[in-house]
Image 1 (spheres, helix red, strand yellow):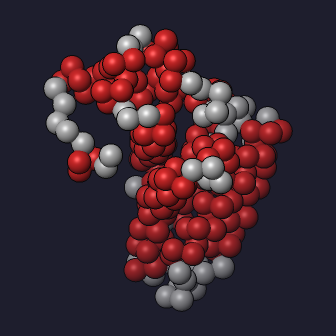
Image 2: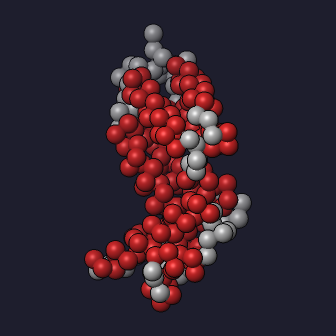
Image 3: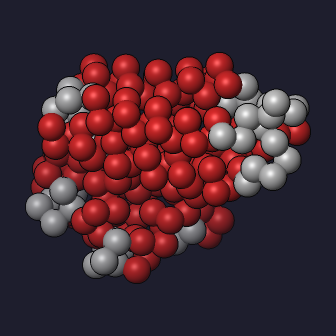
Length: 205
């Protein structure tokens, strides 16, 4: 059910729904979708079956909400840096924020959206479409920042902000995956530095 068609909830109902989604997101982040059952979610969130099915038609519907919630958490954690992506300093600041955040966790968990994509992209078309939309929204901050840099004369007019944003997101996801696997932030540092160096090829003289 899309947000536009979602029935209006009371404050209590909204809080219950949010508790279910947050609990499901935490379980899925730790265990994965396949290893998280609705019974697990009900137990973790102290929710009855009737309550859960009042808000979600099935597990697939709940997973779609988890995907959207994970994007919201990601954006909230990076929003200050993402909104500063209008200068070379802002671009480096975003890179540094990601590196330090990953260093703080030792790479554990990887990217919440990337992990979901690895598990769901080939198994659920609705989930794949939702993930595609979420990555596009995340990338839109990069597109907007790079577009502003082009308009301000910091990068050349022949730079394509959309393609450069995809390049940076690809580097980020690959770097996070290897940082998760090796428990070492260095792959992420190298990947992001490589992506920024690629963007630097379009630096206006």
